[in-house]
Length: 399
Image (spheres, rainbow, N blue to C red):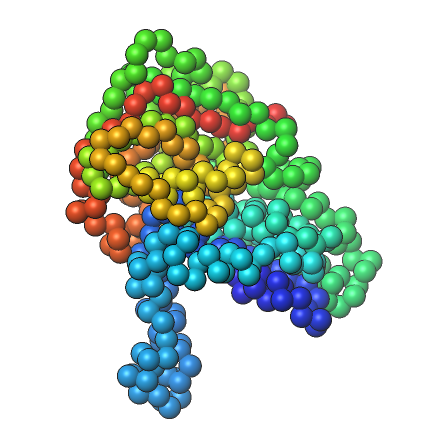
């Protein structure tokens, strides 16, 4: 991540930047759709920052001096919830991706929706470099970095721009290389010219009163689905299996009507692929764990204007500085809920499952779960309502 901030300063000695799985906004990394990632931020702070703070290893500072020399980052994140609070708005003004002009290799991970995604994609789209590459992979974050093919490309990029080996073929490498999930197998799409793909077609699946996903808008009046905030979820499944291949590439999103009797509402959104035998297709997550989803999204009602800003134009959630959105108990709100960018190729006879609720999916490992911090029962416990006739929008490409 520091590569972004360094490149924005345009130091004359900086030849190029390579950035693997890196958020480009510290705020967005900590506040997923507004929901505070307390587990990870506390894990990182107490296991990386504090033990390796300057002055600790050589014993030159006392515990009191060390504490006085550092910022309690998890506490700061709790106190500055919105992007207009504290230093966040200032950072947004002074840290501009467009200031980056050096050659840039940006490699992201589809299975990293709890932290860095969509940072590498936003960086690729936002920087001004003439020479820039975007690669998206999957699975264990360390494995991808050290795979022989990845190391070869890293060396080729650095040789070309750092050691001036201009004839090594780097300029022939496709500028966008996107790994596509096809069940548990993968293939690379190397002919894309932009991300999200300019030719992606938005396909709407409507939430029916029977908790199905239908290509047709349901007839009749809307029905309400009630569930307990902070405790429960709802599931919707495809009305009929896909009759032909369906390739998703881009950022899915929901358009919903919701209300809550609580003080605020968090939505945890998960998309799953189900094979022809009815089994959920399990991928490998960012830490090598079984991952029963191929796309995820997080959303807090009091952040709805922040989350929605510019999304329909850019089709990648950015969470720019927008002040708190008011929440009135019992009031029905029309909301736009983006999911993080995803890639999945469905075969005929496979199905899609959507989960919308107020809890982490069991496959989310403990450090990446959204627990504690400002996720408190007194704020989020209460009856939540989602109405039928809303829709899930999937970006479809035909390759």
